[in-house]
Length: 225
Image (tube, rainbow, N blue to C red; front, side, top):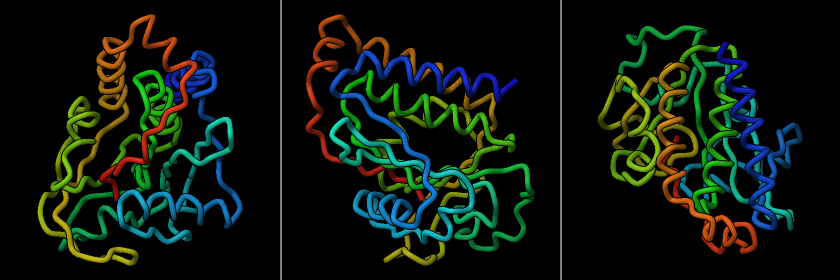
């Protein structure tokens, strides 16, 4: 069932791209090393963490581009553990995780307007719902609250750890993070709430503006690990 819902979200994402016109974005699934290096660089510039490309290969990874082929961000859905968000928890071995999990990471995006954000997040959530695992784990830097307030507060989740974490490869310093787990049902309901909120920000004039104006925003800090 969730795989079909995921495909529907991706189809919605593609349809909404038509309304974006010149501000549309296009996703490329990564296979070549240079493409993984690009996602690594985009995320490092946004968040300060240099994720190993070998780790980004443990699942599906995407970079999105605008119509001028300028990278606008990307994300990765790691399907094979051990997961970084779990590995950085002190005494992580006591956590009851198995092969039914995947990890959302390396999320970064030039946000733009409401329609553009809906395009991006519906593709991300659709991809997550299409993966074999039923549960999604992710980490949020507790010092950086914007994305949590704007996106993940709409998704019911279980915080399995919040506090100082171990320094892993690619991290320059220790941070304080919340490690959260959501399942596909919670993710679906949360995205629908988020989409409803974004739709309230849209008007006919804003759609016209977003359709014909290129976004000038810089890539925002996604606060993911």
